Image (tube, rainbow, N blue to C red; front, side, top):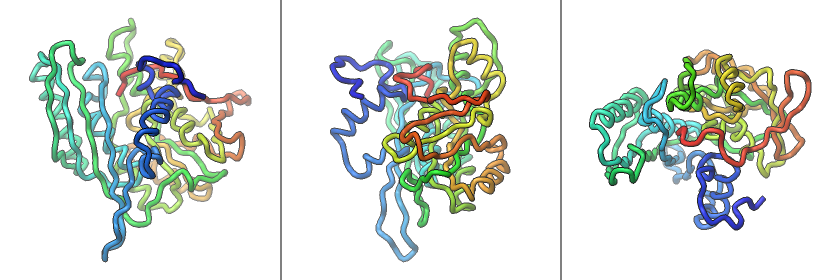
Length: 345
């Protein structure tokens, strides 16, 4: 569907992770920059290096920009979000994160103490994960030319020989696993904006997933594919995965882990938790015979205690995501045009 046709202006929804963003990428950026690496549209570019005596490996490279509002929210801040997000984008392609760059666009008048808190948060996550922040850039723009602070991070990691996670390996019968409850990050950021007259204890799930993911990859040969369900949530990731592929995905509503407070708040606000951003979750596609061992392995990790098999790959309908509801019906889970919650990452 050519939903960008005749559009004269970029909308907020073009950066939200939904259909408009995918059209922007496909009809403009991918069209202009197309090459065999970019066209994979992976969380990280995977660049094969020449084999050496020690074996072959791949260089993995990713970049992301963070514009979350407000800068601080329950469970994190823009700095923690930036480092965790870059680490996770490398980890889901099977890479060990090594080096990160940071670019700061700062609005004139930002309090020094605010910037110091954010950089301390970034340093803490990087140190804990054994990742080095090795280069960066600073720009300061006039007051009202930016909203306090924007951060860009790029990351480099290395993927070892024998690790090959790609959509082409997925087959009908494969199981879909997620490492815990969904929807917390988007709602935590929304609550922090103070736009609604309610109190909530929901906190962001923002966390670095490299240790969990590396353990899974090192202990199982049955992993087919991974993605982190950030903008657009679980529903969008699955739609991206099955789009233009010869298979579909089926979700089991009763198995999707969602906290009761998240369910209640979504009902009040009219949101669907399937589409709400997460910042500490990974979707894992694993072969049917390897699903239970991988599930047990993930549940032994602090960030995977609530892991569940939430669905499976099916032969039909091709390119579609459907959900078996708790009452026995079926529901099509389509990709939204925009996003329920803009500027949550």
